[in-house]
Image: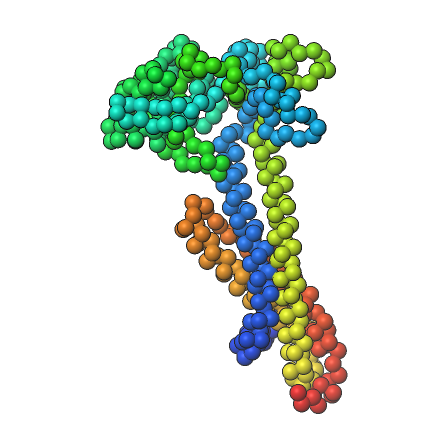
Length: 414
């Protein structure tokens, strides 16, 4: 063990000496490793950060929530788009039938969005998303009130003229005043404000409740033509009920409600967040492969650079190797000494690349609304790749050094 520790320390010192004595030559040779590690790990760092943010946005939709809609989220195959267009719209009656018949659903809600002007006295906001929702919406989708209250069952069922404002809608209309109990105008009709949402901020898809106004769907039905608008029914599964079981039940209910013949194609789509996740996984996989290809060329060049350094190092220290062998140093000791030296040199290049990435994450996180984190997994990957490149690149020079004849080596005057 002591010999092994001594071997590692000596190899590290030799590698450090190569960097200090031949600064330009060594740094230029290690540049390939630095660029390669930077290319690969920076791509993974950006992807990991984006994936974390995207998955957080997707999870906010609910991994146990299914969405019944006219259009699928993923349109593939030979199914013509005009058949999707000819499908009937999702209706409030569909929601009622699901609520009556479903045994696997914990809650279900219909939602439909339109853009309208919102006015309070002399203040107004154009093109605001008005989200008409049924009563169980808060049990299916994330819904965080900052102040006020949610709709009562009576208000939802009877379509009372009440509204809940997004955080960014409240401030321009009312300023510092309390909006609760005041009346805004939508569709030319006055509605009482009963609540204001917490500040949420945009997710990765640019969605947010901050710029929305929530109203009962039964109120909206009296002022917009819901027969020609894309609606969504969100259905949350009961605890312990898998999505596949809920999907099968909902498919049966929808086909029965719409009196579809056996064997006929569904005229509705049931979407879930896994569709989005799978799409992003495929995208990230392709771009990660491109990152490996780009970084791989730099790592290859860096490997040749380290091999060149080690061949020169063996040549310069031939007489020293002969002396070590004459004093009893075994061939494996010489071999391991040069191998560790090559690994340390490669690690210097890899760690330099990691340092550049770390500084880059600090700059990007401070400048953009995206938190970049250099994860422990990526650090370990960079160190592992650097070590392997050093091991492979240094093997032949190290093997050459271990095969030297002690007498001939000591005569060397290089």
